[in-house]
View 1 (cartoon, one colour):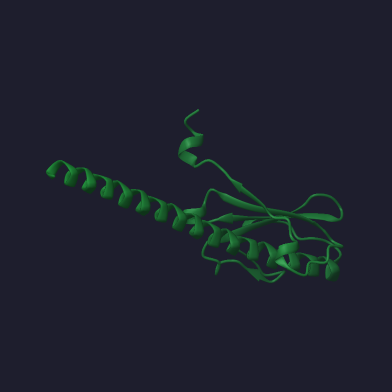
View 2 (tube, one colour):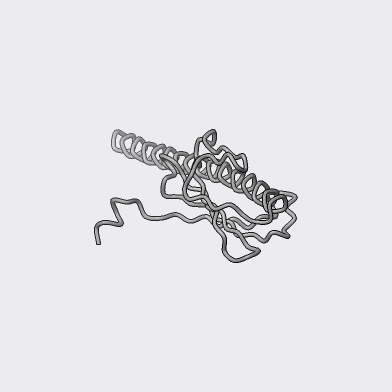
Length: 142
């Protein structure tokens, strides 16, 4: 009887550990998805601002890893997960936007490429590429 109790207790402990690990992984994936969504919203806002600026001024603005641009005007400092952005021309009618993660998301970049004639009605219509780079400490080991 005593041996069965010990085995039952061990099985119970293993099950509790597996459940705790799976809940932790699920929560982490949820958190990352939520943070990536905030970056996608920022991309959408930048996209609409860039298209509006192009229509009013006839050209796109170039920004290299900035948090605020007063010509748009656009301020990404309030976004807790992605507060730095770049805008860059691909060709005469095409523009690229990248937003870069902060602190916990510093290895994430969201990128969108669009045409001046694109009519964006919803964030769901935008094809945003999510790029995860290696952490700096892993890149330097080669």
